[in-house]
Length: 410
Ligand SMILES: Cc1cc2nc3c(=O)[nH]c(=O)nc-3n(C[C@H](O)[C@H](O)[C@H](O)COP(=O)(O)OP(=O)(O)OC[C@H]3O[C@@H](n4cnc5c(N)ncnc54)[C@H](O)[C@@H]3O)c2cc1C
Image 1 (cartoon, rainbow, N blue to C red):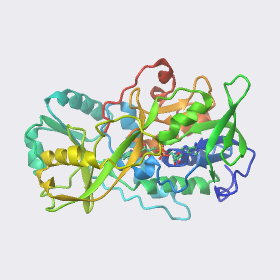
Image 2 (cartoon, rainbow, N blue to C red):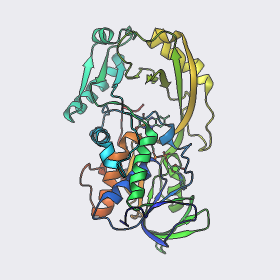
Image 3 (cartoon, rainbow, N blue to C red):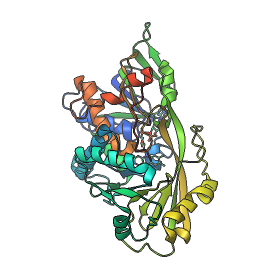
Image 4 (tube, rainbow, N blue to C red):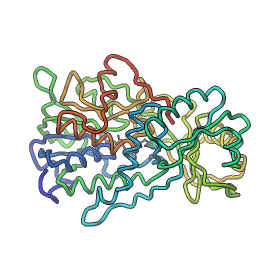
């Protein structure tokens, strides 16, 4: 990379006419990739991150509920989250610049997946996969659940899966800023602009230039799509199929009149799809909307009727003390939702091999950012995955229409 301190956000456009890698989108995925590229001593090409909104106020990253879990159904997703645990436990050393780093504030409070009779087979199957991967998880009977979390109504439950260690919540903005500060320090350049066009060679199988809304054009060896819920609009620029769409997800933060009597409420995923966790000194809940279809990427209207008619009744059913609560604030964000299999799409496009996907993370991209960024940087710099093999997430399955299904989606 270029010498430390040479990077930064410019208001004047890219400083060079060409780059090795141009990353579209500078939130947690784009900045993790920039970080890992710039940390590798074998990587010596200039990197440009193009971000259209440097406030990140509508990025999934900053609107995230910012939690980490090891309880997935696919080993690759479990391994990515286990690496997140490793990365955040050494976060300061990993991202510090001149001894300073953002405060991540990780709270190890666990995830608790609840199941009725119908859901127990999937819960048990996932549990076996998780244990085989080394995750510290336990299956609980309804009696054990009631003994441990006395405030839960367990009447309609057949069991649950609890994360015992290394699952919890952190500050999403700090994670992103950590990647950014170190990437900039290492020489990565950030510009505020919007990618509006991708030029290819005559055969159409290689991106040669990136066109920006400001009118600037830069040459590049490769482009990486880290555009979150807007990813499809970027892949459309080179006519590559990507079944990723923005889907709305709301978060409601509330006070409870009487504090729950018992241990800290883990991030609890109800059988209805509702989830709730502590957000000290408050609680935070969400659920997929009843009409879970694609939304306009600029639609950030809060669905208050969902709270009244769906979410609050589900909360009260599961935790009767939540009858007496008051909402303090709420917001919506967008999942980048892969309609084929709810899993990420990562790696080069077969038809345009220097166009890379880093998309479709639904509700688990924050925790996957460290591992995915590292893996993609390996692929770009060394031509192969060296740590976590993400081949199963490749774009070729999208072209073939063969799902690689993740069953533990929140
Ligand atoms: C309500 C909610 C709760 C969530 N909870 C969790 C959780 O608990 N745990 C977890 O791991 N994940 C969670 N997620 C998911 C996680 O936040 C995302 O998967 C992750 O942040 C995706 O990061 P990203 O960088 O790919 O996308 P984003 O953060 O959306 O960033 C994309 C960036 O690309 C920029 N961009 C787009 N198009 C262009 C263009 N043409 N030119 C230039 N820039 C462009 C945008 O401005 C944006 O800054 C949640 C998401 C939501 C919405």
